[in-house]
Image (tube, helix red, strand yellow):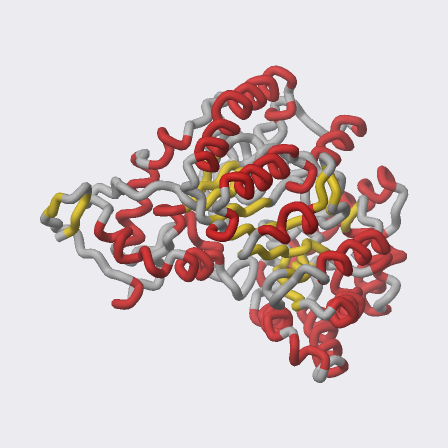
Length: 451
């Protein structure tokens, strides 16, 4: 039996709660809403699902259809969402959640975050959901990527999540208006996206703020600190007086802290009780500036020092390392930076969907990858006692299959060659040279030359 709107209903569906052994259940479909810069909805930023309109950076299905975005109201109790809820309540694995099911990006899963944040509402989710998956619960966790505005061109990113990438691809002719993953850049489609954004999306979010129904906001981009709506919304929550009950999360490149006459910490976060920042970074100094085009290392470090003054706990400010192939030669710099700032160092890897994605550390031969990790762990045994999650992430790389263990030798070699061509083309466009970075490790440098 479950209750909905004060009424009791009989149920024939077997419902298994997490406390009773359900390992696939996640509170996100009952509380969370995600929107991409191209106005496509997903379960969350980690979910892998068929694209309704454009290819997304983590899609399985590469087909596309005419631009036809859904409002939150249309999406929330759609057949798609209802079916997901039914499967999760029964403890079934759904393909959309394979990133968490298989811990594909990190040993820490997004599912854990939602189930912890909404732990006291898990019973409510079961009670307020019909057998067909319809729920009477409403969104309280928001992750709206309002646009792709970003001043960085991180190597493993792309035009969908970075306006700087978008501009570069258009300037260099590296885009095809008929390609599903890039057709959103056409003027006519962008005009439709902007119209839907202005008339629907902004109002959905602002209405939730005014209704004081928000429990969590995840600011992620693009670069969220460049969005005017970020600064206006945070200021409005403070004005409405419920800033102590909203949890604020960021994934920011931390390139600058002042916009629209406000300082992120002095004027906003110092007024919030619960906030944390994952400062996205890929390497220190020269390595970081190579992987993360647009990064000015000294400015980034200075901003982090300023932010550190406001962090009350170690969870408030952390470094979020994305482990890349070139970044593997700069692990020491990352650890030393975390030590200097006295912040925790977290890590996730670039996931390789095919052997041509040479930005993933998994493109390295097993022997080389393991050697780099083992040497680093031995050298920094004492320092790493403060960074358990980083140790775990590195050890996980040794457990996950490398490209040479996943693909046939022919597929592996052809993939590497294709990936190398992409890297070299990008180096020519940006006036950079990956060989200079990889020369820090003789064996890696020789491997790269041999491709």
